[in-house]
Length: 341
Image (cartoon, rainbow, N blue to C red; front, side, top):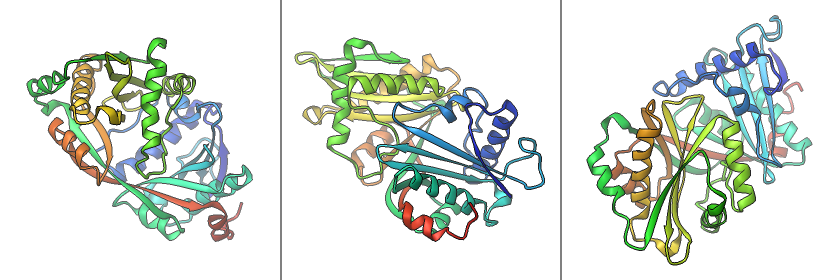
């Protein structure tokens, strides 16, 4: 096998398609009911980062293949953000247990150390071979979430409208597609700050924005990566505070399944049913704005019974466990010292 550091921002189109084929082959094996990815905005998705973040990528090819011409055996990325490295290693089924994953993992840990980063994190799909792979390499289970899916074709839309109308007096709801107006950025960022003040315990592997400036960058980055944002928020009329919010993105790479991002209600406004009403309103807006959508996927901590209840009421059904692991890059690099650089 041949390991090659790879730049998706400048790679030929043919190599992007080889990456896509490898990713979809692994996806089919691990999550056979998930929609396959497409080429739309894939280059931006793989190369664009927030300011201050850096991303590195590698591919593994057959030794005897001309570079960029044969199916890939595996791919990996390392995203450096906020003093930690988030890794992803994908190996096609036929190449598993042949050292491809170890080769890619060694490349990510060595680069993290060269960049001065020791803490590594990874998201792992429960029930797949990746669980044993990471645990065998010293990764520690840090957090678990449950992914739930909503089939939009089975939604009771009348019931959803009733839930969306359940916003108490003294609040108004806004829907924004593609971004936010400047007038609301500051108040929205303050509401997002609540997630940091009450951390759920996970590794925070998805970017979060806690200032108006960072929020601008975050929205611009989403769009550049082909992730179209939809935002529903509730404003407390007497204070102008954003009392609650919910975010969904529709990826150009798999436009029939949307991804739920944050749903936040400020502690001062708990107990008013805002989370349920905002998520219901979001689904109503998505039906009109994204007619190609078939499903929405969301994640929540398994111990978060309140959010689970809201998701159940909306029609989401638990689908798959998602685990987050962490590791020390020094320990990992030492463990993989026998892997050729």
